[in-house]
Length: 269
View (cartoon, one colour):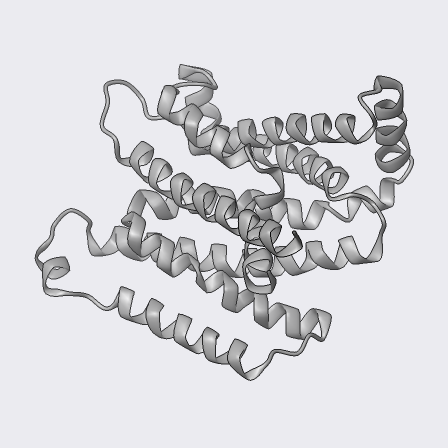
């Protein structure tokens, strides 16, 4: 039963990640009349929806009792401010990473992005060895070498890419730098988040609520700093359509599978 659950979880994660990448890429390159939706606002909306989803899960674990839910949230979050503040670091990194993924998918094709982003497995392994003193076996190191080789081959320019004028060299460089930065931030945040989970007895749902709280704050700061003028001119939900909401829902559909957790889940499943 445990093995079946592992494979089911892996299948769901693969489906969610693949569908998210394809829909996000399509939504960022689709040409429509009017302003395009702001990725910074999409990150904030996804964070708020994740908080709601996790609260519902805590409510379910509390036997559908509002009183029990209120007590759990009060005891585990409000009464433990220092424990809650620990999540500010991975949350800030996660918010930055989410915005970087939008930048990457706006400048890279989906296949190149997806393969390159798997370098987060390598960064997660390195941070796990350095921060958690984990030991990797020969086959794990061999798998990481094969992964790096595959990413290198994907980035190697082909004749069709040299002739293609769809993406400029500058935009490809921006996309590559964005996804590489996201890989390093994903590895660090994932391992840091795991370390926090091991040091406390709080559930992953409570931790995700704390992550979402700080993520929403950092996300709103980003909206104000980088897109404040556009928001004041065209509104917070400018350019939103059905496809945009699909992207947002896919990001928050599985609160446990946000990028901070994905890389760790994939390598140690």
